[in-house]
Length: 267
Length: 304
Image (tube, rainbow over all chains, first blue to last red; front, side, top):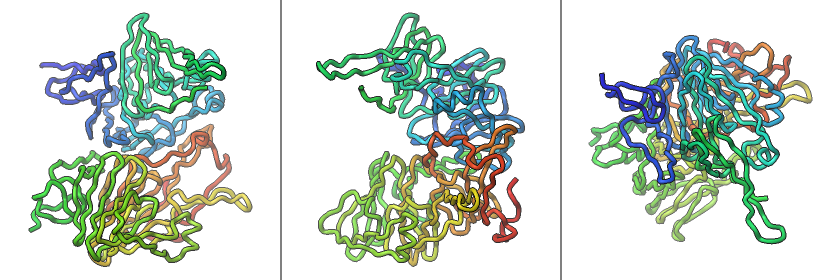
């Protein structure tokens, strides 16, 4: 049987499919890559449906302005998410609160220190309250991803959710991500992570030693192998001059940015 | 000749135009329905026209859409002043006093509406990315709309408001606090004769026709409108947990029969309250609406 490889998640699908069964990316359109090497994240078609990890549960995407991720959970299947993202649910879907480790640190940092687990059978829909697009990232066992806080919509229950502390005062104060960023790890089983990018999302693979400077608010995700440091960009102007800050991402690894972000004022 | 029935406004037309003349929904697109039964309201195409009486409405823009009306002599529409984008000098503008002013003031609703009379052109828009929803109302039909979605209506449509009945209290005695997740009041629009109602939805809009007895739980602020036949109760979802006490998720339980519409952008609560225990381990909440034996005989069961 002919197979087709999804260029976004690398999953091999039946060649007759028009969307990837694990990430929903269209398989019948060419990649959009800028000359600088940024690739637009696949724009998911209305009502695209894909599988959640190795389970029989599925996720269906609708809405192009403020997209909605609608999960059809089979019995005992679970996804977790931040509490406020629930748009609607069916009666049979039960919700369970789960506090995260080191919740006090997260609370001080203004991060969600607990998540809600939804258990099937039934349907539940989640959305972030902003214009943008969904980024579906199937995680293979052993794969890790660092994500900007408050960007994840949902993850399958097998994905381990943790956070890492950002080191360096300049990084904390001017990095745009605060004290912590989320880390998602697929441990022994394949998992699914769905993010919300404000505006449009672009992805790029940095080679060893290659670096790029991005507006701190534009950072969305990176592989742990990519280092991120805040650098000061003097703007001149003599006495009372201003500085701008940029996040410098250095390879090797994959990074993702969003085109709509909170602009951090110069100091 | 009515050989085409628009699936969104359920009115007939001859399908010769690219858009439904009653609600502006595109005729030449397939219905986008998800597996659970929600139908995505298709955005009204740029420059689509809607006919009402001898006047016309044209929708332009597809990010923050504008409703531009060409009012014929004798036709009029009413609206809240903050949605007025522009008007021709010849269009007659007048204040339209609302009854029960004290109640409206307490609920944070506009005390005065504006009325525009033709001939002339006038345009309206709300200030959020989203969609304009055109709801043609046949004589006698009523629609209950959540506050702050109303854009403009023709004068054949009467405007009233009802208590939403969606509330709960936390605490007791002097510390008792009242919460109205959906607002204290809802707008009720009723057509005396065929009229047009324009609403603004933030983000994307989805509609669903609930069967008799079918129910769905929706985030309170996501609701846009419901048919009068759809009953509504407050539903507070509290995630189960052994060690922690969770903030209530404020939802609305909607029970058919009838149509409901929701939006995908609805305003989150402040971040610092996420998962915060606001009523304590021994706290409780109360609402007569959740106790069917007392007040609502048609609600037959308590929520788990």
